[in-house]
Amino acid sequence: MVLYGSGKLKTLMVFPSIFKGEHIKHTEMVKILSGKEITVKFDEPCALQIDGETILNVTEYTVTAKTKVKAKA
Image 1 (cartoon, rainbow, N blue to C red):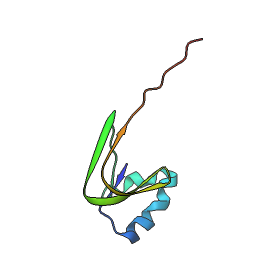
Image 2 (cartoon, rainbow, N blue to C red):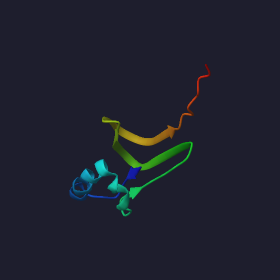
Image 3 (spheres, rainbow, N blue to C red):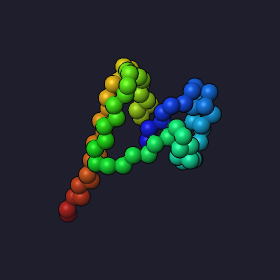
């Protein structure tokens, strides 16, 4: 999920809806992506929130899905 193009006030108003999964209804500021590998490039450095950690001055971010491996007994 990518949140973009919103001001601080709008973001604060929408943020609580994340806990109920209703944030995806805000299509004017939320984009849902799917794929095995996704790269997001920013026009200018920005801060990212990833699993509660803040990463500053990010210009590009790539995420790769891991495949679950089933153990055989």
